[in-house]
Amino acid sequence: MPELPEVETVRRGLSPHLDGNRIQKIEIRRPDLRFPFPEDLSKKLTGEVIRNVGRRGKYLLFRMENGSTLLNSLGMSGRWTLTGGEISFTPGTFAHGAAIGTGDGPHDHLVIDFQDGLRATYTDARRFGYIHLVESGVSEAEDRFLSVLGPEPLEPNFNADILAKNLSKTSSPIKNALLNQSIVVGLGNIYVNEVLNRSGVSPLRISSSLVKKNGKPTKGLELVTNQIRAVLLEAIDAGGSTLQDFRGVSGDDDLGWFPVNFRVYGREGEKCLKSGCSGIVKRIVQSNRSTFFCAQCQR
DNA sequence: CGTACCCCCTGGCTGC
DNA sequence: TGCAGCCAGGGGGTAC
Image 1 (tube, chains in turn brown, green, yellow):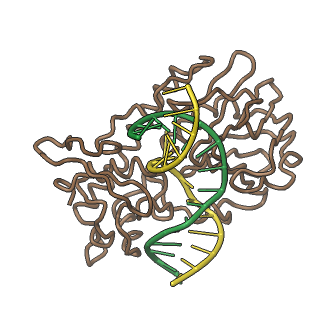
Image 2 (cartoon, rainbow, N blue to C red):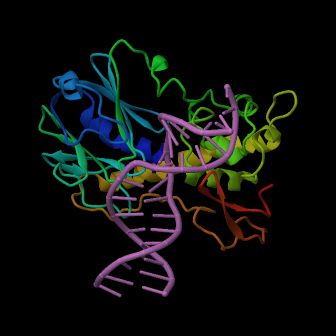
Image 3 (tube, rainbow, N blue to C red):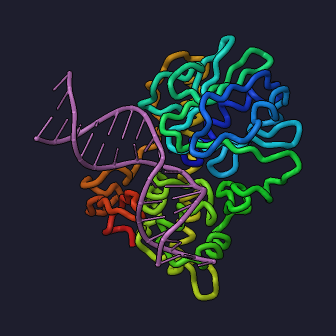
């Protein structure tokens, strides 16, 4: 599902409405998603105020005034819908999205009602997503999900040296390494393909071959680093404009989810879009997931 | 230890 | 239009 740009788009859609809002009621409709819901979740959060809606990698973080944090992974099909008052929207919905979650759909698993009358509904057909509570007094650095995460690629301190350091430890192909959230967060199967294509780096390259003997990044890894940032930023920008259009619109599930035009993803058998390249986009499978690339210009 | 696989689950699309 | 088969944006757990 959602990779970093989509999660960020959802965050930006929720934040203005949820920051500072007090939770009046939490209804949990089933015992689990991917994992069981945290014990006594409703009891622990009813009456609490959301300080802000944040993000770490692909996780949404609902930080509470009492110091606890509700962590939500959207998995493949998770989405949030806000309803109540004049509002009814699902930030970053899928282009083929099902009916908007109003709180009583078959896949509406978690419903949070706020003091101001707003309702936030978490909908997740495939239930690969999950909800986790970082208890008050437990720092994010100690949390089992958050502590293992690698650097944020859009933070100013992210650079090719850091990536080189993390990649030098692994013997796996670069495609797999960049999907590993302990090396760098935020990339999923779509954007990792796009990043490698734009960088001219083969997904089959062994990660350590992009690091020089002295531990410094190769030219290719510098390109990868820059393209990670560029691709994610472009996608966020595109999602941001989508969100603008979506705000306040009720029942519209036709908006495109990925406004960015993919250069390789889903384009098996089509011509490589790099100017001057006569290659054809190939599809292979790496770790059971589709990889799209041009063997001619990605080396 | 690091790495490779196998799933968890529903739904949309394609092709017969 | 029915249905089987395939595919899907994630990532934890486990077996090597």
